[in-house]
Image 1 (spheres, helix red, strand yellow):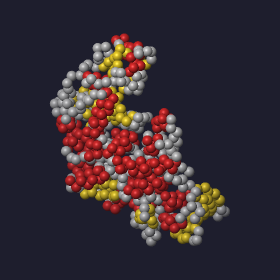
Image 2 (cartoon, rainbow, N blue to C red):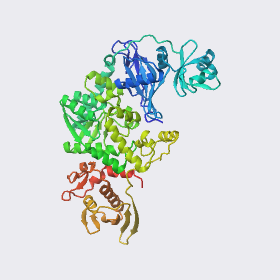
Image 3 (tube, one colour):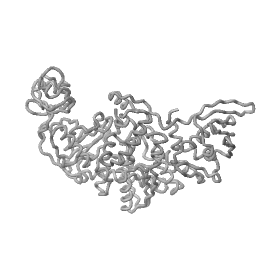
Length: 635
C-alpha cells in the first residue's frame, strides 16, 4: 500500500548531540565530534520540517494528547511507505513518531514511538494507560498485547482506536500502541485486549539536550556539502565540454531545479539559458518566483506559456489525467518544452535537470546523462542525482538564496496544482492555501463523477488520480464499502477500426473497413497532407502516397489499395491521421518535429501547410498527446 517504498542505497542520518543538529555523515564539521546514528527507514529522502509542517505536527499532538510540545530546534522529516502521506519525525536525534494523513478519516494523525511517548508523558499529556508489573514484564518479554486484567489505571477519555502511551507502575514509558477498548472498559479490567502494542522497550528519562539552528546545521555539514558540490561542479563542466551543445537549465520553481541552477551558474558562469514551461496550471506563486529569481541572478529566461484552456481541454477530451495516464505532461509541458528548444536551439541543446534518485524508482534507474525521448533535441544531465532532499535544502540555506514561498505553506509539490501525483493531504492543503483553485478542481471532477455515475468517494478519497486503480486503493475502496471499477473510462471511445483484407493477383492488397467514429472530411484532408497528395470529392478524401491509395469516407468507412510490403506502414499512418484529425489538442509535438515549418497550432489544434509539407510524416512519428492518449482509451 505504498508508492515510495523503494530502497535507493545507503540510508544515512546522524545527529550531533553536542551541536543539536542533523548530519549527512558521521562527523560534525562544527565541533569535530561523531554524531549518533538515527535509524531512519528507507528510502531515506530526509528533509527539514518547515513552519507549516511543524504547526500541523504540534496541532495534531495537542488534539490527540492534550499537550503542547515545543520544537525550537531542527526538526527532520523522512517520507516512509503509506497509502498517502506519512513522515517519520526526528527531533533531538530521535524518531519521536510518524505523522500521517489518515486516509480513512481524512485528517492528520500522530503515531508516537517510544521517544515521542516519553516526551508526551513527561509533559503531562493524556491518552495514557498504566500496566501492572506482571503485564509490563510480559510485554517486554514478547507479548504483543496488554490485556484488560493487567490495567492498573488509565485516562478515562481514551476511545477505541486512539493512540496511547503505556507506562509501568514506576511511571516509566515502556510501550506505545492502539487502544482496543475505551477508557471505561479498560478500568473494568475484564478479559480481552486493552492495547495492541506497536513498540516496546525501556527508555531512560530524557535530560535537557542542545538544540541548534539550521544555520548551525549548515556549518556542521560544511565538509560533506563541499564534497557534493565539487563533484557536481566537475560533472557539469565535463558534460558541457564533452557535448559541445548550447547549455540550458530546466527550471520548475522547485528546490531541486534551484540547486541545479545555482550549481550550473557556479560552474559555467552565465553562459547558459533558463528554460521554463508554464503549463497554464502552475501555482501563481511559482510563476512569480521563477521570474523574480531569474532576474535577480541576471540570467536569460526562455519561457513557453501554455493557455490554461489546454489542460482543461485535455481533461474534457480524455478524462482526468492519472499517475498511470499522464496526458497532461505531454500536452502541457513536454510538447511546449520541445517547441521552446526547437525555436531557440535548432541543433539541440544540453539541459541540466534537477532530477534525483530518491524521488522514484524510475529516476533511480535512469543514468546521469540521457536523451529525452519525449523532448526532441534535448540531452538531459542530472548533477544532483544522488543528493537527498536534506543535501538540497542545506545547500540552499548555505547559498542564502530565496526559495519558493510555497514550501513554507506546507506544500511539498509546487508544480501544477491539479497534478494527479498529489497526495490527498496536499489536495486538502490546497483547500486551505488556494481556495479558488481547489473549488475549480472539485467542480471539474464533479462533472466527470456525474457523467460516469461514480459515488462521491471517487473524489473524496482521490480515486480519480488513477486510470487503473492500484491494489492498495482497490483495497481501500473495499474497506470503505465503495464499489469502484478497476479501470475508469476516459473521455470518449478509443479510435479503432475493423478491417477486411483481400489479396489481388497482381501482388496488391485491398483493405476495407470502418472507423468507430464519423469524420470531418476537411479536417482529415488537411492532416492527410503528411502522407502524400490529397484531394477531396463529395463524400471522401483521397490520399495518394508511396505505399498506395486511401479513400476515407464521411461515415468512417475507408478503402486502402497497397503493395504487400507497404501494408503495415499505410495502415499505421491512416490510423494516426484519423486520431490526429479527431482528437488533436494542440500539444505542439508535431510542430517541433517538422523541419520545414509546415505544421502550426491554430484554434487549439495542428494544421498542415500544404505548400510547405513534403509528406515525410516525421510529425506523425513523435509521441503526440492525441496518439499517446488514444492508446490508453477503452475500445
